[in-house]
Image (cartoon, rainbow, N blue to C red; front, side, top):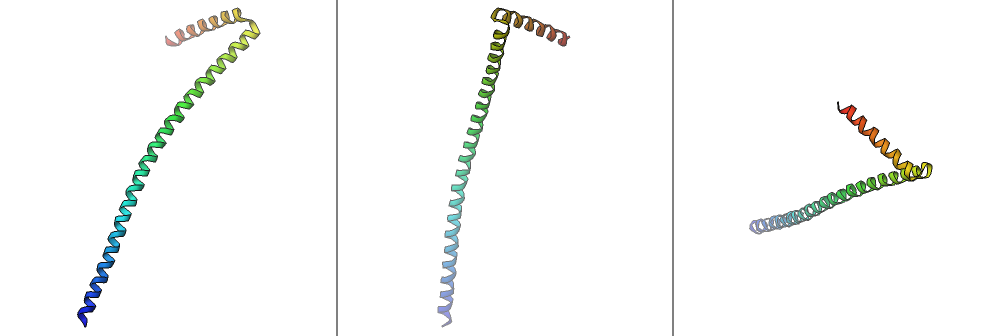
Amino acid sequence: MSQPKVFKAMADEQLLISGIEYKIRKLIEINQTLSNENERLKQKVGDLTNDVLSLTKRLQERENKAIKLSLANALEYKIGVDKGKEKLAELIEEIERCIIVLSD
């Protein structure tokens, strides 16, 4: 009678081993799926980061443009178009002189 017990124990062990192998295969499959999803999400984060940088740059450019328009309108309102152009020309000349002085 001891021989059937040995066969039953071996069958039980084989069943346990098969169960463990199945679980390992499933874990490997899940790990691969999660790795693929992780890579996809990393790519999406990179794309979104680039979008944010691009939009931030556009926003800064438009803010600068708005400031310039605001200054131009203020100058036009305060001193008129022609005098505003003259004042801007004078300021540009002064800036260029300052650059030359600083360069030396």
